[in-house]
Image (cartoon, rainbow, N blue to C red; front, side):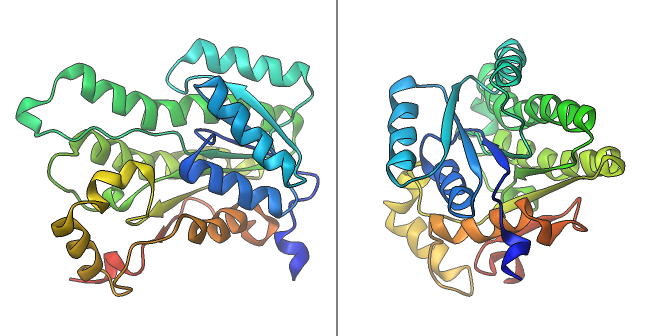
Length: 255
C-alpha cells in the first residue's frame, strides 16, 4: 500500500512555493520522495525556501518566474529542459488576493488576479503537458481551487471568477490529456491559517464566523493539505481525473 503513495524518482514543480501553502505542498511531496522544483518571484525568499528543504535532506532546485508572464514561463521550461529536469508532477499554486467591492474595482486589479490564478495555470500547465506528451511519460497536474470554486463572497469577485474557472479548466485539461495518461485534478482548500488570510484571522467577527460555519469549528492547518497533494500526485490516484477535492472541514456540506 505504501508504494502507491511513493514519489521516489518523480520530479514536481510547485508554483508559488517559496512560502505559504505552496511550500507546504512542496514539503509534503519531498517527504514522499519527490525531487521538488520551487518557484517564486523573489530570489531571497526562494533561496531561503530551498535551503530549508535541503537542510532537511530533500532534493530541491528553484526557478524564478512570474506565472502571468508567458515569455518567462517558456524560457524557464527551456532552461529546465537544458538542466534535464523533467516535470512529472505540477502543482499550480501561485496566487494573490484583492478585496474590493465590484463597483470600485479597476480593470487592472481584476486582470492581475485573473492572470495569476487562471491564465497562469493554463500557461504553466500547457508547457508541462507538452513535455509529458512528447516524452510519453504520463503525469499529474494539480490545480488549486477554493471554496469560491463553488460559492461566492462579497468583495473578492476576481478571485471567485478565477477559482470558478479553475474548476472547469481542470475538467477541460482532464478531458484533453487523459489519453496521454495525464491525470488532472484540483484541491479546494477551505479557510486555512495562512499569511494571505491574516486580515481575516485577526478580525474577531470573521474568525467567529469561520469557526461557526464548518462542522470542525476551526480553521484548517496548512499541513492538513499535504496528504491530498501527495495522493493526487501518486499512483494511488491513477484513475482519478477531472475532480476537485475540497479540504474544508465540511464547510460546503453545512447550511
